[in-house]
Image 1 (cartoon, helix red, strand yellow):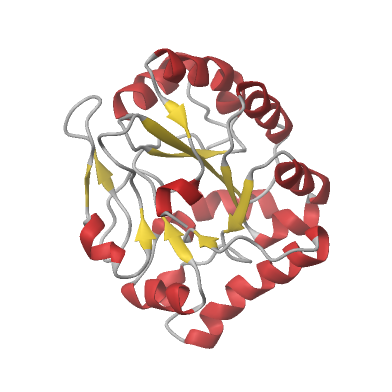
Image 2 (tube, rainbow, N blue to C red):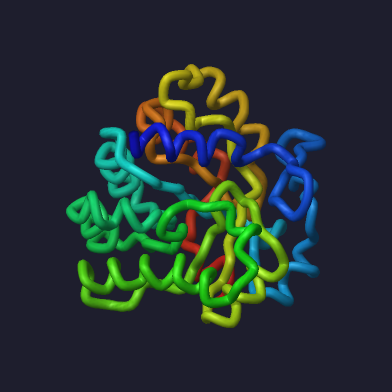
Length: 247
């Protein structure tokens, strides 16, 4: 049931432009920086980022995780092989239900970041205390498990947000991180083929890409080694989101 509910939450995420204040990207040409429904300059006032330096061939690997579907360990194995440090935006229930995988992420140098406790539509939460509770419950679980404070990076579920949310996150000391590169990878019973995945990901990758993938995807686990290899062959290097945000 938990998996079914989470799939409903993510069903419309990633590359669709929503009505209202929701993150969306449009890819006008292969290998170029996409158009977005908010500019980097506008979002900077809220300590919000979605893209790196377009003159620097650097990629930022990020994963959203609400539950485990048996593929996270394989993804971590491949990241370790390629010495790539990623950011895993975890729903609080993931930390609670998969403590060993969460600890492994931290132990292997990845950033575990805040994806809220229950994966709600955050744009519907305008009250500061209610907003803060969604993030603070994740903070508590992380500190209980790891013994340290969680890195202050936040990603709104499904990319749905309001400027009030961004202000609240900044007030709580968080940097919000969106993305520029993604594809429809989250439907576990309708996974894209390897060819479909590469046909989406490679043309959408550009210097400074923040790449969003989902850990529940079998396809992602299957292609990860080749994907990272192809990126390296194209001259890309990988850095973590501390570099993206200058923190």
